[in-house]
Length: 511
Ligand code: ACM
Ligand code: ZN
Image 1 (cartoon, rainbow, N blue to C red):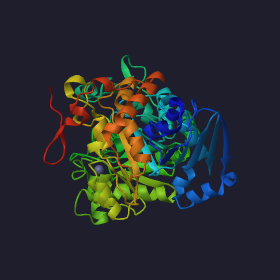
Image 2 (cartoon, helix red, strand yellow):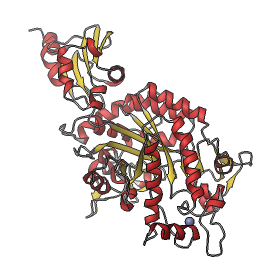
Image 3 (cartoon, rainbow, N blue to C red):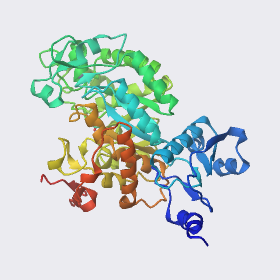
Image 4 (cartoon, rainbow, N blue to C red):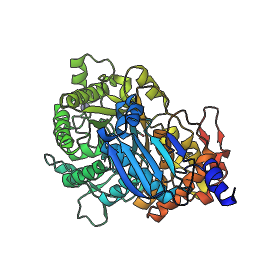
Protein backbone atom coordinates (compact mmCIF):
# COMPACT_ATOMS: atom_id res chain seq x y z
CA UNK A 1 0.00 0.00 0.00
CA UNK A 2 1.21 3.49 -0.86
CA UNK A 3 2.44 5.26 2.30
CA UNK A 4 0.10 8.22 1.73
CA UNK A 5 -2.92 5.92 1.35
CA UNK A 6 -1.86 4.02 4.43
CA UNK A 7 -1.72 7.28 6.36
CA UNK A 8 -5.09 8.64 5.24
CA UNK A 9 -7.06 5.40 5.35
CA UNK A 10 -5.69 3.55 8.32
CA UNK A 11 -3.44 5.57 10.59
CA UNK A 12 -5.12 8.98 10.69
CA UNK A 13 -8.49 7.83 12.07
CA UNK A 14 -6.69 5.85 14.76
CA UNK A 15 -4.18 8.53 15.71
CA UNK A 16 -6.42 11.52 15.65
CA UNK A 17 -9.61 12.39 17.31
CA UNK A 18 -11.45 15.65 17.58
CA UNK A 19 -9.91 18.36 19.72
CA UNK A 20 -13.13 20.30 20.18
CA UNK A 21 -14.53 21.45 23.53
CA UNK A 22 -16.87 20.22 24.86
CA UNK A 23 -15.95 16.67 23.82
CA UNK A 24 -18.96 15.16 22.00
CA UNK A 25 -20.79 12.10 23.31
CA UNK A 26 -19.68 10.04 20.29
CA UNK A 27 -17.09 10.95 17.73
CA UNK A 28 -16.37 8.33 15.08
CA UNK A 29 -13.81 9.05 12.36
CA UNK A 30 -14.85 7.60 9.00
CA UNK A 31 -13.09 4.41 7.99
CA UNK A 32 -11.70 6.17 4.94
CA UNK A 33 -10.20 9.64 5.23
CA UNK A 34 -9.56 12.34 2.64
CA UNK A 35 -7.77 15.61 2.88
CA UNK A 36 -9.96 18.55 3.97
CA UNK A 37 -13.02 16.52 4.85
CA UNK A 38 -14.79 19.21 6.84
CA UNK A 39 -16.57 22.31 5.72
CA UNK A 40 -18.61 21.10 2.80
CA UNK A 41 -22.09 22.25 1.88
CA UNK A 42 -24.42 21.70 4.87
CA UNK A 43 -27.70 19.79 4.53
CA UNK A 44 -30.07 19.77 7.48
CA UNK A 45 -32.83 17.36 8.46
CA UNK A 46 -34.96 18.39 11.41
CA UNK A 47 -37.89 16.99 13.35
CA UNK A 48 -39.87 14.37 11.37
CA UNK A 49 -37.44 14.41 8.48
CA UNK A 50 -34.77 12.91 10.76
CA UNK A 51 -33.93 9.29 10.11
CA UNK A 52 -35.69 6.56 12.08
CA UNK A 53 -32.34 5.59 13.54
CA UNK A 54 -31.69 9.10 14.88
CA UNK A 55 -35.20 9.38 16.31
CA UNK A 56 -34.80 6.02 18.02
CA UNK A 57 -31.39 6.92 19.45
CA UNK A 58 -32.73 10.13 20.95
CA UNK A 59 -36.08 8.74 22.16
CA UNK A 60 -34.82 7.67 25.57
CA UNK A 61 -33.01 10.93 26.38
CA UNK A 62 -34.41 13.39 28.94
CA UNK A 63 -36.49 16.15 27.33
CA UNK A 64 -33.81 18.85 27.57
CA UNK A 65 -31.19 16.56 26.00
CA UNK A 66 -33.51 15.51 23.17
CA UNK A 67 -34.11 19.17 22.37
CA UNK A 68 -30.38 19.80 22.05
CA UNK A 69 -29.32 16.48 20.51
CA UNK A 70 -27.82 16.42 17.05
CA UNK A 71 -25.87 14.31 14.60
CA UNK A 72 -23.26 15.56 12.18
CA UNK A 73 -21.85 13.52 9.32
CA UNK A 74 -18.88 15.02 7.54
CA UNK A 75 -18.12 13.65 4.08
CA UNK A 76 -15.67 15.09 1.57
CA UNK A 77 -17.23 18.36 0.47
CA UNK A 78 -20.58 17.64 2.13
CA UNK A 79 -21.91 17.80 5.68
CA UNK A 80 -25.24 16.51 7.01
CA UNK A 81 -26.90 17.61 10.23
CA UNK A 82 -29.83 15.94 11.95
CA UNK A 83 -31.63 17.47 14.93
CA UNK A 84 -35.13 17.21 16.35
CA UNK A 85 -35.40 20.97 16.98
CA UNK A 86 -33.88 24.25 15.77
CA UNK A 87 -31.99 24.28 19.09
CA UNK A 88 -30.33 20.97 18.23
CA UNK A 89 -29.46 22.33 14.78
CA UNK A 90 -27.97 25.42 16.43
CA UNK A 91 -25.76 23.26 18.69
CA UNK A 92 -24.65 21.27 15.64
CA UNK A 93 -23.74 24.42 13.74
CA UNK A 94 -21.70 25.67 16.72
CA UNK A 95 -19.82 22.37 16.69
CA UNK A 96 -19.15 22.77 12.97
CA UNK A 97 -17.92 26.28 13.63
CA UNK A 98 -15.55 24.93 16.27
CA UNK A 99 -14.32 22.24 13.91
CA UNK A 100 -13.59 24.96 11.36
CA UNK A 101 -11.88 27.20 13.90
CA UNK A 102 -10.27 24.90 16.42
CA UNK A 103 -10.18 21.26 15.39
CA UNK A 104 -6.65 20.21 14.65
CA UNK A 105 -7.70 17.02 12.84
CA UNK A 106 -10.71 17.96 10.63
CA UNK A 107 -11.62 14.38 9.86
CA UNK A 108 -14.48 12.90 7.93
CA UNK A 109 -16.54 11.67 10.85
CA UNK A 110 -19.88 11.09 12.49
CA UNK A 111 -20.74 12.96 15.67
CA UNK A 112 -23.69 12.06 17.87
CA UNK A 113 -24.14 14.50 20.70
CA UNK A 114 -26.37 15.82 23.49
CA UNK A 115 -25.72 17.56 26.82
CA UNK A 116 -25.27 15.92 30.21
CA UNK A 117 -27.01 18.66 32.23
CA UNK A 118 -29.89 21.00 31.50
CA UNK A 119 -28.22 23.99 33.21
CA UNK A 120 -24.76 25.01 31.98
CA UNK A 121 -24.34 28.51 33.27
CA UNK A 122 -22.30 31.60 33.82
CA UNK A 123 -23.04 34.28 36.43
CA UNK A 124 -21.76 37.80 35.89
CA UNK A 125 -21.73 40.30 38.75
CA UNK A 126 -22.94 43.59 37.27
CA UNK A 127 -23.32 45.38 40.60
CA UNK A 128 -19.71 45.65 41.73
CA UNK A 129 -18.57 46.60 38.22
CA UNK A 130 -20.95 47.49 35.42
CA UNK A 131 -20.14 45.83 32.08
CA UNK A 132 -22.63 47.07 29.50
CA UNK A 133 -24.40 45.51 26.50
CA UNK A 134 -21.41 45.11 24.20
CA UNK A 135 -19.58 43.01 26.78
CA UNK A 136 -22.65 40.86 27.43
CA UNK A 137 -23.22 40.22 23.71
CA UNK A 138 -19.59 39.16 23.33
CA UNK A 139 -19.79 36.74 26.27
CA UNK A 140 -23.11 35.36 24.96
CA UNK A 141 -21.31 34.59 21.67
CA UNK A 142 -18.62 32.77 23.65
CA UNK A 143 -21.21 30.86 25.65
CA UNK A 144 -22.93 29.76 22.43
CA UNK A 145 -19.64 28.45 21.06
CA UNK A 146 -19.08 26.55 24.29
CA UNK A 147 -22.59 25.03 24.44
CA UNK A 148 -23.52 26.97 27.59
CA UNK A 149 -27.19 27.86 27.92
CA UNK A 150 -27.91 30.02 31.00
CA UNK A 151 -26.61 33.52 31.69
CA UNK A 152 -27.29 34.63 35.27
CA UNK A 153 -26.99 38.39 35.80
CA UNK A 154 -26.38 39.58 39.35
CA UNK A 155 -28.10 42.93 38.79
CA UNK A 156 -28.41 44.31 42.29
CA UNK A 157 -26.16 44.47 45.34
CA UNK A 158 -24.91 47.01 47.86
CA UNK A 159 -22.42 48.46 45.37
CA UNK A 160 -24.95 49.40 42.70
CA UNK A 161 -28.47 48.88 41.33
CA UNK A 162 -28.21 48.05 37.60
CA UNK A 163 -31.75 47.58 36.27
CA UNK A 164 -34.24 50.29 35.39
CA UNK A 165 -37.42 49.99 37.46
CA UNK A 166 -40.05 52.31 36.04
CA UNK A 167 -42.27 52.23 39.14
CA UNK A 168 -39.29 53.14 41.35
CA UNK A 169 -36.87 55.24 39.27
CA UNK A 170 -35.08 56.35 42.48
CA UNK A 171 -33.27 52.99 42.56
CA UNK A 172 -31.12 53.87 39.57
CA UNK A 173 -31.20 57.62 40.18
CA UNK A 174 -29.78 57.24 43.70
CA UNK A 175 -27.87 53.94 43.64
CA UNK A 176 -26.50 53.29 40.14
CA UNK A 177 -23.53 55.65 40.51
CA UNK A 178 -20.94 55.79 43.27
CA UNK A 179 -17.67 57.47 44.18
CA UNK A 180 -14.93 54.89 43.69
CA UNK A 181 -14.41 52.83 40.56
CA UNK A 182 -12.93 49.94 42.50
CA UNK A 183 -15.17 48.30 45.04
CA UNK A 184 -12.45 48.63 47.71
CA UNK A 185 -12.08 52.34 46.97
CA UNK A 186 -15.82 52.87 47.42
CA UNK A 187 -15.73 50.82 50.62
CA UNK A 188 -12.74 52.83 51.90
CA UNK A 189 -14.62 56.09 51.35
CA UNK A 190 -17.59 54.86 53.42
CA UNK A 191 -19.87 53.68 50.57
CA UNK A 192 -20.78 57.03 48.94
CA UNK A 193 -23.36 57.00 46.15
CA UNK A 194 -23.58 59.90 43.71
CA UNK A 195 -25.76 61.25 40.96
CA UNK A 196 -24.92 60.44 37.34
CA UNK A 197 -23.60 63.94 36.70
CA UNK A 198 -21.28 64.05 39.73
CA UNK A 199 -17.71 64.53 38.45
CA UNK A 200 -15.81 61.22 38.74
CA UNK A 201 -18.95 59.18 39.48
CA UNK A 202 -18.64 55.51 38.47
CA UNK A 203 -21.60 53.37 37.45
CA UNK A 204 -24.43 52.78 35.03
CA UNK A 205 -27.47 50.58 34.59
CA UNK A 206 -29.39 48.68 31.94
CA UNK A 207 -32.61 50.22 30.70
CA UNK A 208 -35.48 47.77 30.26
CA UNK A 209 -35.02 48.14 26.51
CA UNK A 210 -31.32 47.19 26.87
CA UNK A 211 -32.26 44.09 28.84
CA UNK A 212 -34.93 43.07 26.33
CA UNK A 213 -32.29 43.38 23.61
CA UNK A 214 -29.90 41.16 25.60
CA UNK A 215 -32.63 38.62 26.31
CA UNK A 216 -33.47 38.49 22.57
CA UNK A 217 -29.81 38.26 21.54
CA UNK A 218 -29.30 35.40 23.99
CA UNK A 219 -32.52 33.64 22.93
CA UNK A 220 -31.37 33.63 19.29
CA UNK A 221 -28.42 31.59 20.62
CA UNK A 222 -30.60 29.35 22.80
CA UNK A 223 -29.36 30.96 25.99
CA UNK A 224 -31.78 31.98 28.73
CA UNK A 225 -31.04 35.00 30.89
CA UNK A 226 -31.78 34.59 34.60
CA UNK A 227 -32.03 37.88 36.48
CA UNK A 228 -30.98 38.10 40.12
CA UNK A 229 -32.57 40.63 42.47
CA UNK A 230 -30.78 40.23 45.81
CA UNK A 231 -32.72 39.98 49.08
CA UNK A 232 -32.72 40.30 52.04
CA UNK A 233 -28.91 40.62 52.42
CA UNK A 234 -26.56 42.52 50.09
CA UNK A 235 -29.23 45.23 49.90
CA UNK A 236 -27.74 48.38 51.40
CA UNK A 237 -28.36 50.30 48.16
CA UNK A 238 -32.11 49.76 48.60
CA UNK A 239 -32.03 51.02 52.19
CA UNK A 240 -30.03 54.05 51.09
CA UNK A 241 -32.62 54.77 48.40
CA UNK A 242 -35.66 54.15 50.58
CA UNK A 243 -34.62 54.72 54.23
CA UNK A 244 -38.29 54.85 55.19
CA UNK A 245 -38.60 51.06 54.79
CA UNK A 246 -35.25 50.16 56.40
CA UNK A 247 -35.01 48.64 59.88
CA UNK A 248 -35.28 51.04 62.81
CA UNK A 249 -32.71 51.48 65.58
CA UNK A 250 -33.64 51.64 69.26
CA UNK A 251 -34.44 55.35 68.96
CA UNK A 252 -36.74 54.76 65.99
CA UNK A 253 -34.34 56.16 63.38
CA UNK A 254 -34.01 54.38 60.02
CA UNK A 255 -30.88 52.32 59.51
CA UNK A 256 -30.19 53.39 55.94
CA UNK A 257 -26.74 51.72 55.99
CA UNK A 258 -28.22 48.37 57.00
CA UNK A 259 -26.99 45.48 54.86
CA UNK A 260 -30.36 43.71 55.01
CA UNK A 261 -33.87 44.62 53.97
CA UNK A 262 -36.40 44.87 56.78
CA UNK A 263 -38.65 41.77 56.70
CA UNK A 264 -40.90 43.42 59.28
CA UNK A 265 -41.99 46.30 57.06
CA UNK A 266 -44.84 45.70 54.59
CA UNK A 267 -43.28 48.45 52.45
CA UNK A 268 -40.40 46.03 51.74
CA UNK A 269 -42.81 43.51 50.19
CA UNK A 270 -44.69 46.16 48.21
CA UNK A 271 -41.37 47.36 46.79
CA UNK A 272 -40.09 43.85 46.00
CA UNK A 273 -43.33 42.85 44.31
CA UNK A 274 -43.39 46.05 42.25
CA UNK A 275 -39.79 45.36 41.19
CA UNK A 276 -40.41 41.70 40.40
CA UNK A 277 -43.54 42.55 38.39
CA UNK A 278 -41.31 44.53 36.05
CA UNK A 279 -38.51 41.95 36.16
CA UNK A 280 -40.77 39.13 34.99
CA UNK A 281 -42.10 41.31 32.21
CA UNK A 282 -38.54 41.68 30.86
CA UNK A 283 -37.16 38.18 31.42
CA UNK A 284 -39.27 35.31 30.05
CA UNK A 285 -37.09 32.71 31.78
CA UNK A 286 -38.91 30.40 34.18
CA UNK A 287 -36.31 31.11 36.88
CA UNK A 288 -35.82 34.30 38.88
CA UNK A 289 -32.89 34.38 41.30
CA UNK A 290 -33.70 36.08 44.61
CA UNK A 291 -30.29 35.86 46.27
CA UNK A 292 -30.79 34.89 49.90
CA UNK A 293 -27.09 34.70 50.79
CA UNK A 294 -25.13 36.23 53.61
CA UNK A 295 -27.88 38.18 55.37
CA UNK A 296 -26.22 39.67 58.45
CA UNK A 297 -29.50 39.82 60.46
CA UNK A 298 -27.82 42.17 62.95
CA UNK A 299 -30.43 44.91 62.84
CA UNK A 300 -33.50 42.72 62.85
CA UNK A 301 -33.42 41.93 66.59
CA UNK A 302 -33.60 45.61 67.50
CA UNK A 303 -36.04 46.79 64.85
CA UNK A 304 -39.55 47.44 66.09
CA UNK A 305 -41.12 46.23 62.82
CA UNK A 306 -39.06 43.04 62.76
CA UNK A 307 -39.93 42.32 66.37
CA UNK A 308 -43.62 42.79 65.67
CA UNK A 309 -43.36 40.42 62.70
CA UNK A 310 -41.65 37.83 64.89
CA UNK A 311 -44.40 38.08 67.45
CA UNK A 312 -47.16 37.80 64.85
CA UNK A 313 -45.53 34.77 63.25
CA UNK A 314 -44.55 33.12 66.55
CA UNK A 315 -40.84 33.15 65.65
CA UNK A 316 -38.36 32.47 68.42
CA UNK A 317 -35.21 33.27 66.43
CA UNK A 318 -34.34 36.33 64.37
CA UNK A 319 -33.10 34.15 61.51
CA UNK A 320 -36.63 32.87 60.90
CA UNK A 321 -37.29 36.31 59.37
CA UNK A 322 -35.00 35.34 56.50
CA UNK A 323 -37.16 32.27 55.80
CA UNK A 324 -40.27 34.46 56.06
CA UNK A 325 -39.05 36.93 53.43
CA UNK A 326 -37.57 34.38 51.04
CA UNK A 327 -40.59 32.09 51.38
CA UNK A 328 -43.10 34.89 50.83
CA UNK A 329 -41.31 36.12 47.71
CA UNK A 330 -40.79 32.61 46.35
CA UNK A 331 -44.52 31.94 46.75
CA UNK A 332 -45.30 35.25 45.02
CA UNK A 333 -43.12 34.15 42.10
CA UNK A 334 -44.83 30.74 41.95
CA UNK A 335 -48.21 32.48 41.87
CA UNK A 336 -46.92 34.49 38.91
CA UNK A 337 -45.74 31.43 37.00
CA UNK A 338 -42.06 31.63 37.89
CA UNK A 339 -39.69 29.61 40.05
CA UNK A 340 -37.38 31.12 42.65
CA UNK A 341 -33.69 30.25 42.72
CA UNK A 342 -31.63 31.14 45.79
CA UNK A 343 -28.14 30.69 47.19
CA UNK A 344 -27.81 27.71 49.51
CA UNK A 345 -28.50 29.70 52.70
CA UNK A 346 -32.20 29.67 51.76
CA UNK A 347 -32.26 26.02 52.77
CA UNK A 348 -31.50 26.84 56.40
CA UNK A 349 -34.69 28.69 57.19
CA UNK A 350 -37.30 26.75 55.24
CA UNK A 351 -38.33 27.32 51.61
CA UNK A 352 -41.18 26.29 49.29
CA UNK A 353 -40.69 22.89 47.68
CA UNK A 354 -40.35 24.23 44.13
CA UNK A 355 -37.46 26.63 44.95
CA UNK A 356 -34.15 25.81 43.28
CA UNK A 357 -31.01 25.87 45.43
CA UNK A 358 -27.74 27.21 44.04
CA UNK A 359 -24.93 25.61 46.03
CA UNK A 360 -22.03 28.03 46.53
CA UNK A 361 -20.52 27.25 49.96
CA UNK A 362 -18.95 24.10 48.56
CA UNK A 363 -21.18 21.25 47.39
CA UNK A 364 -22.68 20.19 50.74
CA UNK A 365 -25.68 22.55 50.53
CA UNK A 366 -26.50 21.29 47.05
CA UNK A 367 -26.32 17.65 48.10
CA UNK A 368 -28.53 18.31 51.11
CA UNK A 369 -31.04 20.25 48.99
CA UNK A 370 -31.17 17.42 46.44
CA UNK A 371 -31.78 14.90 49.22
CA UNK A 372 -34.69 17.08 50.41
CA UNK A 373 -36.18 17.03 46.90
CA UNK A 374 -35.09 20.45 45.62
CA UNK A 375 -33.64 21.03 42.20
CA UNK A 376 -30.05 22.13 42.51
CA UNK A 377 -27.48 24.09 40.53
CA UNK A 378 -23.92 23.47 41.60
CA UNK A 379 -21.58 26.46 41.69
CA UNK A 380 -19.28 25.60 44.59
CA UNK A 381 -16.73 28.26 45.48
CA UNK A 382 -14.17 25.45 45.73
CA UNK A 383 -14.18 25.03 41.93
CA UNK A 384 -16.55 27.43 40.17
CA UNK A 385 -15.62 30.87 41.55
CA UNK A 386 -13.74 32.66 38.79
CA UNK A 387 -12.87 35.68 40.91
CA UNK A 388 -10.34 33.36 42.58
CA UNK A 389 -6.71 33.18 41.46
CA UNK A 390 -5.95 30.95 38.48
CA UNK A 391 -2.22 30.84 39.22
CA UNK A 392 0.28 31.91 41.87
CA UNK A 393 -0.56 35.15 43.63
CA UNK A 394 2.74 36.78 42.67
CA UNK A 395 2.13 36.55 38.90
CA UNK A 396 -1.57 37.33 38.78
CA UNK A 397 -3.63 40.51 39.06
CA UNK A 398 -5.29 40.96 42.44
CA UNK A 399 -7.92 38.26 42.97
CA UNK A 400 -9.54 36.30 45.78
CA UNK A 401 -7.45 34.02 48.01
CA UNK A 402 -7.72 30.40 46.93
CA UNK A 403 -6.21 28.82 43.82
CA UNK A 404 -8.77 27.78 41.24
CA UNK A 405 -6.62 26.81 38.28
CA UNK A 406 -7.87 25.41 34.98
CA UNK A 407 -6.65 21.98 36.12
CA UNK A 408 -8.57 22.26 39.38
CA UNK A 409 -11.82 23.48 37.78
CA UNK A 410 -11.64 20.60 35.30
CA UNK A 411 -11.50 18.03 38.11
CA UNK A 412 -14.93 19.07 39.42
CA UNK A 413 -17.88 16.73 39.00
CA UNK A 414 -21.41 17.79 40.04
CA UNK A 415 -22.56 14.14 40.24
CA UNK A 416 -25.43 12.16 38.81
CA UNK A 417 -28.22 12.90 41.26
CA UNK A 418 -31.26 13.57 39.04
CA UNK A 419 -32.12 16.63 41.16
CA UNK A 420 -28.86 18.29 40.05
CA UNK A 421 -29.78 20.46 37.07
CA UNK A 422 -26.19 21.34 36.29
CA UNK A 423 -23.40 23.68 37.14
CA UNK A 424 -22.36 27.27 36.78
CA UNK A 425 -19.27 29.46 36.92
CA UNK A 426 -19.61 32.63 38.99
CA UNK A 427 -17.65 35.75 38.19
CA UNK A 428 -17.89 38.10 41.16
CA UNK A 429 -16.39 41.47 40.37
CA UNK A 430 -15.26 43.23 43.56
CA UNK A 431 -11.72 42.76 42.25
CA UNK A 432 -12.53 42.69 38.54
CA UNK A 433 -12.99 46.33 37.56
CA UNK A 434 -12.81 46.15 33.75
CA UNK A 435 -14.31 44.09 30.94
CA UNK A 436 -10.89 42.92 29.70
CA UNK A 437 -10.04 41.75 33.21
CA UNK A 438 -13.39 39.93 33.34
CA UNK A 439 -12.51 38.04 30.13
CA UNK A 440 -9.09 37.21 31.56
CA UNK A 441 -10.78 35.54 34.53
CA UNK A 442 -13.24 33.64 32.31
CA UNK A 443 -11.02 32.11 29.63
CA UNK A 444 -9.90 29.35 29.57
CA UNK A 445 -11.60 28.30 32.81
CA UNK A 446 -15.06 28.57 31.23
CA UNK A 447 -13.93 25.89 28.74
CA UNK A 448 -13.72 23.45 31.66
CA UNK A 449 -17.25 24.32 32.82
CA UNK A 450 -18.44 23.74 29.26
CA UNK A 451 -17.00 20.23 29.10
CA UNK A 452 -18.11 19.27 32.62
CA UNK A 453 -21.63 20.46 31.81
CA UNK A 454 -21.93 18.84 28.40
CA UNK A 455 -19.80 15.69 28.16
CA UNK A 456 -21.18 12.49 29.79
CA UNK A 457 -20.07 11.69 33.34
CA UNK A 458 -18.78 8.33 32.08
CA UNK A 459 -16.03 10.12 30.15
CA UNK A 460 -12.83 9.85 32.20
CA UNK A 461 -11.68 13.46 32.30
CA UNK A 462 -7.92 13.96 32.41
CA UNK A 463 -6.65 17.54 32.87
CA UNK A 464 -3.49 16.78 30.90
CA UNK A 465 -5.51 15.53 27.92
CA UNK A 466 -7.79 18.57 28.19
CA UNK A 467 -4.95 21.05 28.35
CA UNK A 468 -3.79 21.00 24.68
CA UNK A 469 -7.41 21.20 23.52
CA UNK A 470 -7.98 24.23 25.77
CA UNK A 471 -4.74 25.76 24.49
CA UNK A 472 -5.93 25.43 20.86
CA UNK A 473 -9.33 26.93 21.64
CA UNK A 474 -7.70 29.73 23.61
CA UNK A 475 -5.86 30.83 20.45
CA UNK A 476 -9.19 30.92 18.65
CA UNK A 477 -10.64 33.08 21.43
CA UNK A 478 -7.69 35.45 21.16
CA UNK A 479 -8.17 35.69 17.40
CA UNK A 480 -11.83 36.47 18.04
CA UNK A 481 -10.75 39.38 20.24
CA UNK A 482 -11.11 38.01 23.78
CA UNK A 483 -8.56 38.86 26.43
CA UNK A 484 -7.44 35.63 28.07
CA UNK A 485 -5.18 34.17 30.73
CA UNK A 486 -1.82 33.11 29.26
CA UNK A 487 -1.59 29.32 29.44
CA UNK A 488 2.00 29.42 28.18
CA UNK A 489 3.21 31.07 31.36
CA UNK A 490 1.09 28.98 33.71
CA UNK A 491 3.19 27.54 36.54
CA UNK A 492 3.58 23.82 37.16
CA UNK A 493 2.05 24.52 40.54
CA UNK A 494 -1.22 25.63 38.92
CA UNK A 495 -1.00 22.76 36.41
CA UNK A 496 -1.48 20.24 39.16
CA UNK A 497 1.45 20.48 41.52
CA UNK A 498 -0.63 22.23 44.17
CA UNK A 499 -0.83 21.18 47.77
CA UNK A 500 -4.03 20.84 49.72
CA UNK A 501 -4.89 21.32 53.35
CA UNK A 502 -6.35 18.43 55.31
CA UNK A 503 -9.78 19.88 54.55
CA UNK A 504 -9.04 19.64 50.83
CA UNK A 505 -8.55 23.36 50.14
CA UNK A 506 -5.71 24.35 47.86
CA UNK A 507 -3.03 26.50 49.38
CA UNK A 508 -1.90 29.31 47.12
CA UNK A 509 1.46 30.38 48.49
CA UNK A 510 2.24 34.06 48.02
CA UNK A 511 5.50 33.61 46.12
C1 ACM B 1 -22.01 34.32 47.34
O1 ACM B 1 -20.88 34.12 46.87
N1 ACM B 1 -22.17 35.12 48.38
C2 ACM B 1 -23.19 33.70 46.75
ZN1 ZN C 1 -36.66 45.57 60.48
